Image 1 (cartoon, one colour):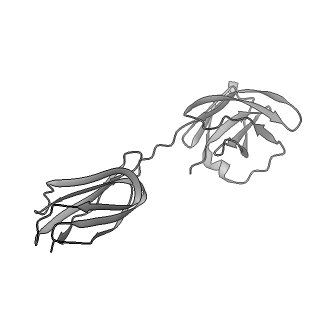
Image 2 (image 1 turned 180 degrees about the vertical axis):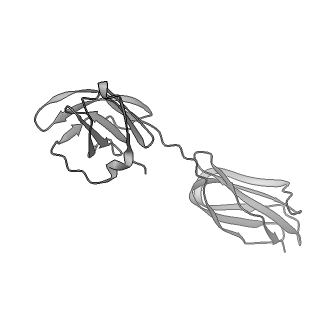
Image 3 (image 1 turned 30 degrees about the vertical axis):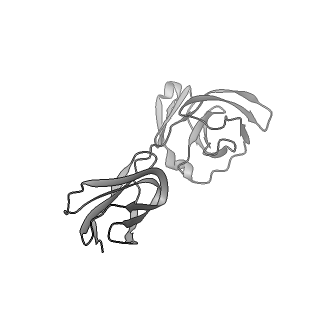
Length: 205
C-alpha cells in the first residue's frame, strides 16, 4: 500500500512531513529546511510545493523522505478514521505542550487502481457429453466470465458470475456430444479493470 503524507508548517524555517498511511498512528518521516516560515503548502504526487514568502516557491521531491530522519519533536495527531478524498485541517500537539490548529494540514488523494488481474491455470475438468467445468485463478478477487463456441474466435455463448473470487469455476451445460469447443475466460477486479485469457479448447465425449 502506498504511503500518504501531510505537511506540517512547524517551527520557523522547518517543514515536517508526516506519514498518515495508518491514520490512527501518524509517523514523522522527515524534515526539510526552508528559508522562511512557509505561508502555504500543497502535496501532489511525488512533490511538495512550498510557498515561502519572499523566497518564492520551493518544489521538494518526496523520495527525500524515504531516508530515516531523526527529529527531536514528538508529534501527536488526532486524525479521523476512514478518511475520504479531500483536504483536512488537523490539531497538533508537541511534546513541549504547544498546541494549535494546522490549517494547511494534509490532503488525502485516493489511489486509483488501474492494474487488471492476472489470469493463470486455465483448465477444463469433469468433461461429459453435454457438460464441462472451466476453472482458472486470478491474483486478486475478480468476477468470472466464460465465452465459448464451436468455431475458433467466435464465441456465441457465455456464462458469468459477478461474485469476486480468486479461484474461478464455471459449469458449461447443454453442450453437443463429440464436439470441439473453443473458449476464453475473462475477469475484472473491483475497480473494473478487465483482462481476458488466450483461447483454449476442449472436446465433449
